[in-house]
Amino acid sequence: MLVPFNTLPKTSKVWIYQSNNAFSDSQLPVINDLLIKFTNQWQRHGADLESSYKIVYNQFIVIGVNDTVSGCSIDASVHVIQEIEQRFNVDLTNKLQTAFRNGDNINTVSLADFKKYVALGKINDLTIVFNNMADSIAAFETEWEVPTNKSWHKKYFN
Image (tube, rainbow, N blue to C red; front, side, top):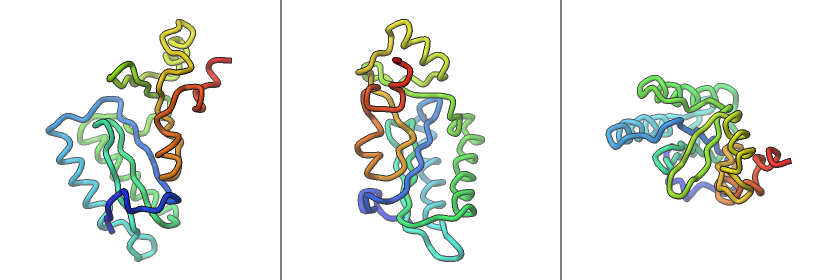
């Protein structure tokens, strides 16, 4: 059952999917429709799940659920993400890519390139990165968009 994202408890589980490209204005309504349909029908063992989603910076999909979910329920959420990937030729599940801010621009690069940019000084410990490992709404709100020195990315500066 779809609820407004901001009404989910801070302890709600979230999954953050980062696109390798920003979604276009023509893609966003279709993506919203797919996610609305999914969250309205999302269930665990036949019971509706209180869930929501948000699209941030036209590049990140955040799905939240106020409940414990099983493997089948998680699989269902992955299927809608895979449908978006296939429909729009975007990569939302590549965990070997990371995103960082350069001014108002969001750059998505491979981890290998991220390490190179650190070595070249193009990324420093204050560069804003996106920590897609945040797993609750509370973590999403406080640990998702942070300076490199407050994220798991800091390991590349040692």
